Length: 207
Image (cartoon, rainbow, N blue to C red; front, side):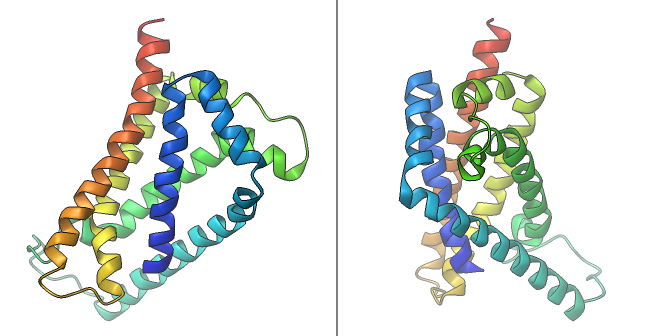
């Protein structure tokens, strides 16, 4: 679970750096997408990434069911403690929100761009125009932002918990890793929030 989590967090950083090119210019984003589509290493990593998602999801379901089986009756008091944050108690629900948006992302973006290169079908659509058409719609912009901040909660717990799982669990490092988790999660969330806000404001409200 932790190893697949680390892999996906690295992917998020890469994905964010590519997506932020869209707020620079149309040509910058299209060049970045073209690089992603034609680079042989990236093409090899796509199925590896998909496998990472599948492993992460399957293991999350397994852990959730195991926890429910071990504790079939909820505690009478469920207000939580410092050792049990809201995010840690709702990781599965947050994961479902992230998974739901992943389905939206694949159908609205990936299927219209990168997928065409893999199946050898019709020519891929202009990546910038696909993003512009989708995220300039206020409804999709709101959905995107909600997803981003669900991901923020997921990362705030998942980041430091992944280190704890591989053995970094002493009281010296855990507080530092929790701070690093907030920094990393906020960097990812703010970066991804900028993109729909940019397109929605520029092409819907200021059009």
